[in-house]
Length: 369
Image 1 (tube, rainbow, N blue to C red):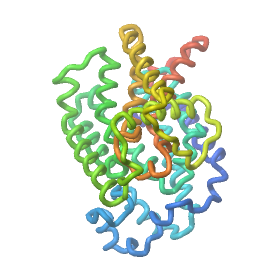
Image 2: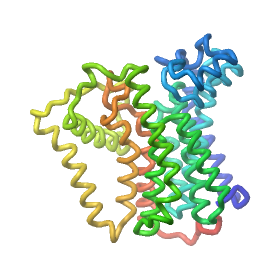
Image 3: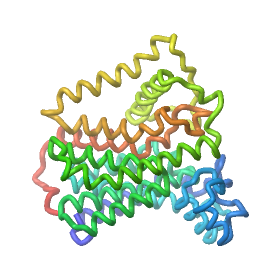
């Protein structure tokens, strides 16, 4: 689907969704700075042109080395200074763009319920942290480039256009410069290829993604190093064995799924639970996750969609499941903003299932694909 092919219904949905987001998030308009926001956006030593240079080439200049995000803050500071309203409204706009791109991509893939999925994503309470917290512009900005790269990749696969391939690669680089969790994109694109064809072919599916995987690995290794050496993700709080990390990951998966299904008692920082290899109940979480994935794998020949959605959810969450040291683990093993992108796997699957259960209507979506 291209911009030229958008019809009145598409434009009406887009306008309605944007209006709904700004209405639902009306309290955010008057919100202030939270926690580490000022450390990101109001540092005097980074406000000059020399500061912009440091943002890109001095690893210790910013709290996390996401140069595109901090460049965006640098530019926004020139527009609205220390007035938090400008940053909040900009982040709301980014969230709207992400939601509309969700609809675009799901329609490219002919997934039922694309509009419903986009609406759920846009208005789901679990995303309030990503949208209302100025520092989490790295979530919304990186998601724009992540989904833009995915859309360009899908066009490349459909049209075999070299320009679309280069665009996808360029947007992926911008996504990595905004937040490294987007390094999961090439794996997600492979997953989409498997979901579409039922199998992967080396030349058709894997070879074109090799540059993406190389960039993802480089960005991931860099972030792991920065988190340990400069951010402070080391010490006794991170002295965890592989079994400990597996227990954390299993429980975190069910926590995140639970917050999507029933988004109650959402808080800024969740209690950091105690990890104990002696507590056999803690093994139930990873065991249940493995059993569910195993059941979906067994049923893959009949229904690939549920497995694809589950693998996207797990794979996109993987960098934040506890296998890598990240600074927020000092306070909690989980955070709502960690699943901003990953939630799409569950939401798209749920929207498709709901749509299929509804009575069929003669209106067709394929005409604008």
